[in-house]
Amino acid sequence: MEDDQQQRPDSLLPYETWIAQALRHVVAQAIEHVAAAGLPGGHHFYLTFRTDHPGVQIPPRVAAQYPNEMTIVLQHQFWDLTFNRATQTIGVGLSFGGVPSRLVIPLDAVVEFADPHIRYGLRFQPADPAMTVPRTASPDSQPEGGEAPSGEDPGTAPGDAAAKGSEPAQVVSLDAFRRRSPQD
Image (cartoon, rainbow, N blue to C red; front, side, top):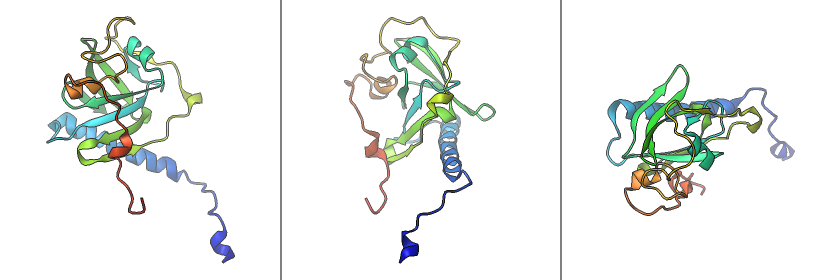
């Protein structure tokens, strides 16, 4: 009975890190597939990432609005979706306040991924804040200020209005899209 109460020893191998890396590559494969073939059926993605992670490139005014984390929705109004295997980055074109912009998101900056159509979601540990460096402005960035992202209320995450058309902003809990284990 006493053996059952002993705790598992600490691993000297980084299994948790390896699992997170493998699951991030599921996100990369989904991005690559959609970049090549488009979004099939009702599939669409919610992609949440750390805006303060090294290598993230977003317009300065968007970075000011979302200094830590941002969710984009890839459904209707995006273009030039790519995954660069060499740099391990996701690239996508989105419009903010009617201004087309190119976002570059390192795969390690992704903290959540969801495909609400099939109620599938993944959550990752955020990068160590001590390891973050100032973000790099994207080459097509506009000066800060101006209007909110195209068709969106100032409190709406960029991409949400694009995915919803002209519907009002809604807060969506990604927990609703996560698969539950049989014990839940």
